[in-house]
Amino acid sequence: NNHPPPQSCVKMREEEDVANSMAPCVFGQEQLKPRLSRVARKVSTIELNKDRSFSIHEPDFIRAVPLPLALRMAGKHWRDNTGCDYTFNLSKPARKIDVFFSHSWRTPWWLKVVAIIYYYNVTAAFLAALALHVCLLGLAVAGVEIPYLDAGVSQGYVWEGDHIVPVPFNFRYVPSCLVFLLVLCFRQRVALRPPNCFLDKMCINQTDAEKKDKGVQQLGALLRASKQMMVLWQPEYLTRLWCVFELAAHSFLYNATEETLVFYPLKQPLLTLCLYVFHFVASLSLSVLSPLTLFSEWHTSWVAENIDPALQYGYLWAVYFVVCFAGMYCLPSFFLWRFCEMHMQDAETMYDQFVDFKVSKAQCFLEADREYVKDCILRWFDSIGAFEDFVQHDLRNLILRHRGEKLQIPFSVTMVGALSHLLIGSNFAVDCARAGAKLSAANTALVTFFISFCSDSLALNLTLRLAASGFGSWSNSCLWRRLAGPLASAALFSAASATGLATLTPVLPLWLVSILLGGLTIANIFVMRPDWTSCFLRTTTTKDTDDPVDDPTPEPDDDDFFSI
Image (cartoon, rainbow, N blue to C red; front, side, top):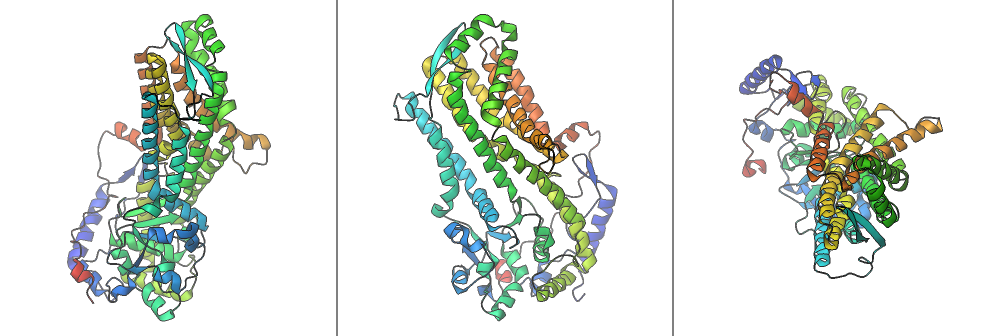
């Protein structure tokens, strides 16, 4: 090794080793082996500038392309790794790169395109849908009728004390659901300040062998110039030497946080969109079936007159469960279950790949690239063994900290998936208030909040746990066992929805509704984040040594960084 670490860094490493040996790293209920959060060899900014792999000697080789150009023509540039002068000229020299895309060309191109579009557009799409819905509700309150939208599917009835009140059912929420999809697909085309990104095919010259080689050798400088790395993960990602090296090199340079590293499983946006369609179909079914069954005049009158008040909640829960299961969730659950299975299988595969990683087993397109990567490993990590140890332990623990042991689904996934429930519920609450059913309007608003932000999340996380256990696996040869998973998923969502909808009974006081839904909300929190439970069970606190070590090294000055 021609670049030994300075004495100050050796001393810091020894101090970290002592600290790590004294305090175990706890993640949730699993105790992980104490590891350094960064590679043992911590180099200074001066050393980085001396290493040709990290310093920029030819700034024209540090290039980026605007995100809309990288995604143009339905992601045409992601379909293969063959570049040309045209694709290269789309990129321009850049002092800073907003996002470095780390991916494998063996991953299906459409998975990567969908994931990137979803990641950058979903927030704007969600807010656009809410803004349009608020405007439509404002027009409804002002008495302005919109053709086709305010035309009631049929007349429904709700309870208001000891009598029933007619309430129309309409499709006022549908335009907002469609606007969400429209903005989600095309928002990047009209962004005022789109991020510039690094895509190897477009930012490294693919037609000139000498320039291509120089561009590849600037990997360290490209990573230093990048504000964020986005790992587009699929199971094949960790089998590629270049991909693992990029991820490890980024973690070597930075204290990898959520701001600098986005580890993005590519099936997660597909799961979210599947959940969105799942709930949208359920909402349409609810709009059509409710005034004919649950909220029909004969049924609401019969419940008020013949069901004992003490039994009304239980009766309505059973009725709502049957209607939700048979009319709303049964058919879409087959698609949702399959995506949940694939997501959990990917989670199990990923951590096994980290543990089993070996440089000799990793695949590389060109042997010359393999030799270059090995040379960088020896200079940055001291040895192949140290690099493999870093991947097997430090990187694995890093992803555990970012994504959880089973690639936990973020709460934003259930929020987006349940958007149609939020829209149809708020629309119905406004219609109840306009019809004079104030109590039903208040209950509907409370139930809408619960179903949109709590019950759907609870049902989804329980479904994912079932999928992880192998229950109802799609690979079973027995038909009934294959059907068990989707039907169990439909039952979970139906039970969660019925728990909220049944509180619309007129005999259940508002305070009791609040206590019931509040208790289920707390249960949902602990199901979503089981590691929080351990916080209440610990009698002593220990320092998590897997947290990033404070970096005493100042950020490199741009003048030094771009020295020629």
